[in-house]
Length: 416
Image (cartoon, rainbow, N blue to C red; front, side, top):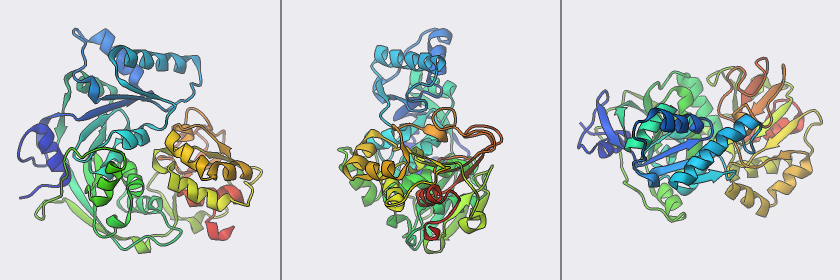
């Protein structure tokens, strides 16, 4: 029996020829990342709990400050200083204020075939480049940092065969919310979501990131695309080479298979308070909003900003709505400046912010108050995720978010 892409990556990292779902293997990691959400805890354990503290390979480590940038309190400032000082002491690659961690990793580090652990649940984003990325807790990150290794229980893989092409005005965000709404928030628990088919080849790397990023919201261990020519060109443009390029074997085993025709996907939202509470936008049209958010590691890239700017150009944001526009990285921010997108957003009344996690993280800039309603391109809409426990979060595409910001109510672009 053959192996899937994910199984081949694990086998390579374990130094064995074959792995099967349910096996447990010790693996050598290619890269590790930690952000300011928990790095201070890892640093405390490193200094206070280890008898012989050491870092196995500092070249594999990346620290990124992105959750609370700039710091929002003396407590946050202290935890970030601890992270900053540790990185300086050991010579760890350190990024602060440059963008959301997963965007930075994709722009500068991730390569096909790599096995990457990071202390953030949306590390599955890296599957857009044919890498196996998964989130771990700070204790597991510490072990990996000190030994360069970890262990993996080989997950089963679900195949998602994508056919057709997305219609105009429909986006990968609509597709992935539809997939999660179909299989459920527990539909891929500790499994790999592998995206393939002719429809997958119509998506560029930024669009593939949308699907892989949200896979954890279906419970997945990770998600992955084959590193095809589209992915390899993305890599070449950034001066990087793949670690290894894997394809799933024709006789690889999949625990389930689904087929989604991209041409049949329509604009949707995830209603409060669950990511799989799927509804067509029409079903919630007219719901008054207080805030709109365009950004995050899922939808803060240049194409998202282009879509949003095209919608608000020549229009004004509703006077009762706060519209936060947050590029996912400084590179994206500068590109948006060059293209005049920032001028358009500011001219419409939007609030353009520095690259960071913003209200998607829910504990820094832009949190919403009691009974307020947010429509967001963020990753989650759990109760209290974006602020007060009584607040409500709807998840949608950049187009639906921008249109709703103008209307002051949830709507699609054609209703403006």
